[in-house]
Image 1 (tube, rainbow, N blue to C red):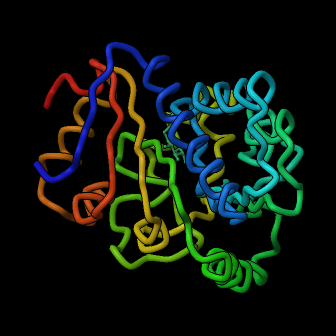
Image 2 (tube, rainbow, N blue to C red; image 1 turned 30 degrees about the vertical axis):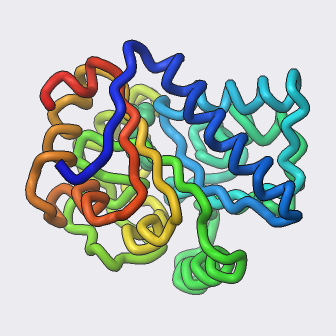
Image 3 (cartoon, rainbow, N blue to C red; image 1 turned 180 degrees about the vertical axis):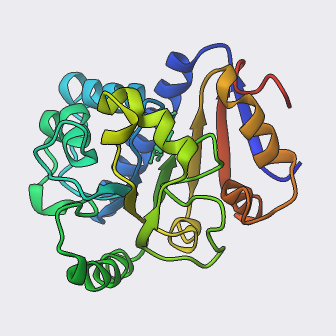
Length: 249
Ligand code: GLP
C-alpha cells in the first residue's frame, strides 16, 4: 500500500501523539524564529488533539504566538455566531483556550454575499501561499470519502471554492443541526490541490463506521469518486487509525 498508516488501540492515545507532533513542529519553528502554518479540521475526529494542545499550552507552556492557522472549510450559508458553525467549533475547542493571535486565524467565511465568494476564495489561496504554504495539515474523513468538504467529483487540482454537500454528508450532520432540513446545502472548502501542497498531512479516523471508507481510501484506485484516494500520491501523509477504522484493511 502507498499510504503509511499507524493503528492504535484507542483514539485517545493516538490523539496525544498527533498533538505532540504538532507541538514539536511549533517549537521547532519557534527555535528558528519562524511561523508555523497549520491547516486545521473540524468534526469529532480532531477534538482530542485540540484538547491535548490546550493541555500542553496550559500545563507545559506551549505557545501559539508564532502559529498561523487556516481551517479547511465552513458551511454556507452560516453565521459565525451560530453554534453549528466551524468558526464557533474552532474557538470553542481550541482558539479560546490558547495564546494564538486573533489576526493569525483564518477560517472560510459562511456569511459572505454570493458575489463576494469567488474573490474570498482566491484571496484565501493567496494568503496560504504568501505565508509559505501549509507546514502541516490535519484531516478527518467523511463517509463519502471527502477531505475538507471535497465531495465525490472533486478534482485533484481543485482549489478553495463553494461546493454542494452530498446527501450522505448532510444526513451525517443532521443530528448536529437537529434535523436534515436545517443542514446547509453548501460549503466553502479548500481544494484537494490546496491540501496536497501541505508539507505534511495527518488524517485521523476512528471507529467501525469509517472502516469501509478507510479501506477504499488506502487500498482503492485513485479516483475523484473517492477524493481522499488522492492522498495516495502525497509524499508525506500518515493515516492515524484506531482498531475500528482499520478493521477492513
Ligand atoms: C465534516 C468535515 C470534515 C470531517 C468530516 C468527518 O464533513 N467537513 O472535515 O472530516 O465531517 O467528521 P467526523 O470527524 O465527525 O467523523
